[in-house]
Length: 223
Length: 223
Image (cartoon, rainbow over all chains, first blue to last red; front, side, top):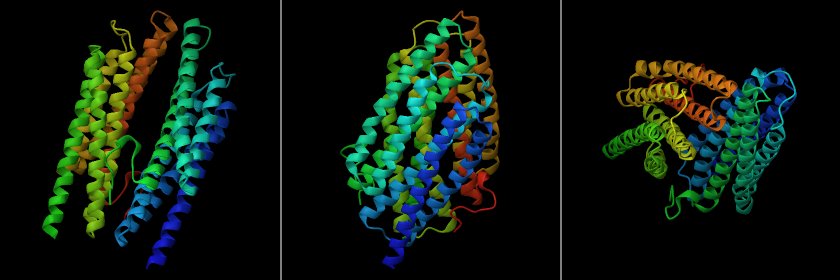
């Protein structure tokens, strides 16, 4: 009984790692699609998002079955609860990658205005955060999860920088406002990607310690 | 045993309705804070968002306890699974209300540019969708849930209209680009509020029928 249970817990772990890798790839493809105005790749990311949704549902099923069939011990219950939350954040990151691709499909096929340098940085840093958060979950590394959470400030600062540049360009009147607005929206999506990675870091800490960062003093699912 | 279980199911229902009412109020207060540049109210919405988070955690606890302590029958399992999803969407709507208030706090205390008319419409329509979705959940009304889902097109069309107006104003160069960008971001948040209300409508249908709209052919949690 316990052996089968452990096998299902392992399956949950593996599928969650697969889903994370799939979502990381979507974010990386979204940058390529934007930079090269690669329409085919942009459509591919949108298509792949259905697969992300399918993965989420499959993992949800495993989690609920684990909860139903067994009486998990405290640590396992926290692990399963955290997994249920982490896949919601991963699915949202997949959505943001898709949203970025949809914007890039509507943009003119011409050289992009200067804020792209900052946006490229935002892609790099938010992808690094996803990687940190998922690695922290797999290796049960609380310090790495904390590093991921702290790293959100880097992406927030890049967003503020990007916004300031875009407002300056709008004021100068030299560039197409529609393109600048699209770039700002992409920057906003990347800020959200980082927020979701930060959430995952917080769920890792909850899974390891039973404490939720934003909810000190009360143990959630405190069993 | 079954009696206590039914009592807990009822408690779940009541708390979910309370959370929905709280979130609806936050959206309505966000509009007031924006229109009147009411800083005190804007801060209050941000403060109240912690209460929304607390409500979400409390309902999660009830759901997990129901799953753990009992072996729910198929209909109840779907109800509990849908509740777990609905509170995530409600919590996000609360976040969007808070985000709108945070933007309004940074805006100049001067008359707002013309796109506000459309934004006011977006507030009205997205609030109506939240109400429809939650009513559909309480009264188990599949048709009302479908109406809520269809209504998302109205809000999407208003967003496109708002975006077009803002781009025209940016091109004219008569208004402060920063204010226009802020209004566009607020419109984007409202479009998301409507998306979350639509999601809730879809979870209501799943809870009633066992079928998920985006996932035809496969019954999720099909027990």
